[in-house]
Length: 232
Image (cartoon, rainbow, N blue to C red; front, top):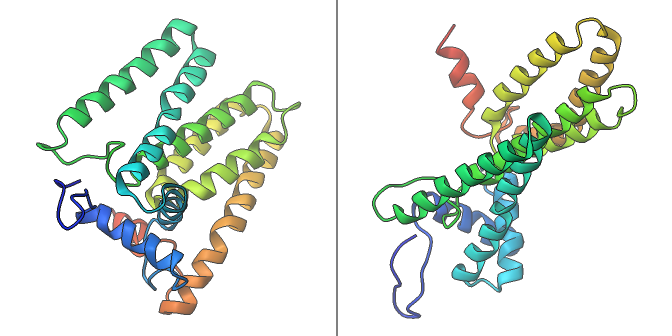
C-alpha cells in the first residue's frame, strides 16, 4: 500500500499487489489472465472483491480483511479440537497479535498482512482448513469418508493460490500413513480420494498453461522444479 495519490487522493496498490490488481482487472475486462500468470485463484479472488467493492481499493482491502478474520476462528476451532478451548483461544489470540503487529509495521517492513494484496493469508486459510478436515477424517475414518474429498478440494484450490503448498500436502500425507498404519486400506482409499479431487481441480489449469506456453506446469514460477534442483 502506498500513500494517497492524485487525482482522486486515493490509495493504489504497488509492487506485488499491483500485479494481482492488474490480473484481476484483465479478467474483469474479458481479456483473461496473462499466459504465464501466477497464483491464479488469488487473482480471481481479487476480481470478486473488485466487483463487490466497486473498484475502490480501500473498500476492497476491508473486504479482504473480513475474509482473513476467519483465520483465527478456524485456528480456535482446530486447536480446541486438538487440545482444549483455552489452547484454541491462545492460538487465535497469537494470530491476532501477529496480524496487529504486522499492520502497525506496514510502513517499515513488507509482509503478508491483511491490508496488502498478497496471496499468503488466503493460502494460509486454505491450509488450515485442509489440515482440519484431514484431522476430522482421522478421528472417525469409517464414518467420515466424504472428508478426504473435501480436504482434497480445499488443497486443490490452495495449490492454485500457492503451488509450494504441495510440500505441506506431502507432509500431511506422510503423517496420515503413520496414524493409519494398521488400516492401510482405509488410508489408501482416503489418500486416493484426495489425489483424485486435487487432480480434477489443477489439471485443467495445467492444460491451459500447456496450450498457452507449451509447458505443462502449475505455476509460472515453476517453484517445485526449482526446489527439486536444490537437492538433485
